[in-house]
Length: 418
Image 1 (cartoon, rainbow, N blue to C red):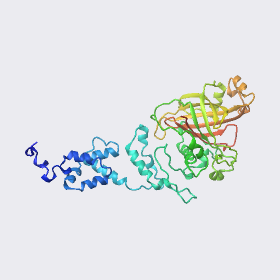
Image 2: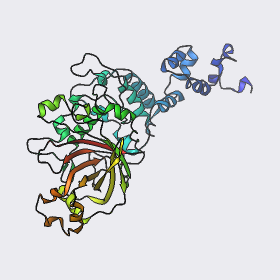
Image 3: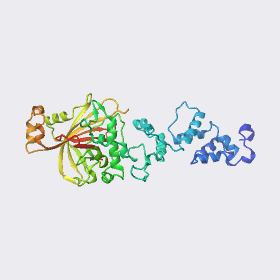
Image 4: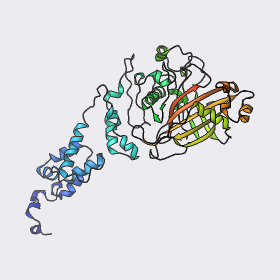
């Protein structure tokens, strides 16, 4: 092409021809997009007048390209100048360390919408990295003078530190002056109580300061990540694994604040109660269904109830198998802004000598005196849990159904076995 055919405003000075400055603007912008850091881009802009004129204006394609490489796509109505300003604003803000004042925890939940949609978000990745660099999650444990840095995250499969101050141990165990606490109030989940139970397990499963469940959990099959939309209805998984916690002897809340579980091998436990249960096809006696419904009445408006029987065993005790009977039901609406919650209630039991025959012939459980049924079991343990959206994890509490003391129980956690 003859130089005379090129518009004057696009002509390069003779000294620039055949050099990088002499390349078309679009090509220079494309090259700049491959630079690894903003500092490199800025240095290139300062190299000469030509690069400043090509790269600095909002109309330069470099701003859109850099924005999309770091963050989620911008709305289609964004102008070029708005995209440039927003990119520069975000890069400035995200270089600054963040601090959290008391009660300012909403920032931790910024990715909830992305989790519900079940997609990967570049915005979440950027903010996660920002949180990882924050000292907020590296606080020392009360009573200790050192902090062991740990990577925090908004993804639950990647742990961050949990403190004893993050939960009320009495709520985690379901103990109150008015009797045993329930995670369900009518058809609604008590999410505040559930958070206390969750934080108890977060602390004892992942914290090196608690020599209780962590050594066992490190060698256990880990919970799976979410792989379905929260609103999708799922079948009750056929295999589960997890832990329960107890405390013996119980001498009051004040002592429970210090020693929080028997899993520290301080009393009766010879090994960590890492347990498994697997759904089987054993028949369910009608009177046994009535017993479980008596202990755990169905939540109002619950639907899609599934009954199941299962076999329970503990790690390294596969020769000792126990029976489980239970049901799982779906809860309507949303809780905490998310749909797809379920409730699981079941009991683990061992018959006494004549127990099975009595219940097999029993036409109606309610023909028995209120406490008469207890005589037909060596022991019975009840479990009530919330199955989190996604169907992979259930968190709740257990209690001794034959015992009157409200403390005879504790928190539990199970997750879908691989």
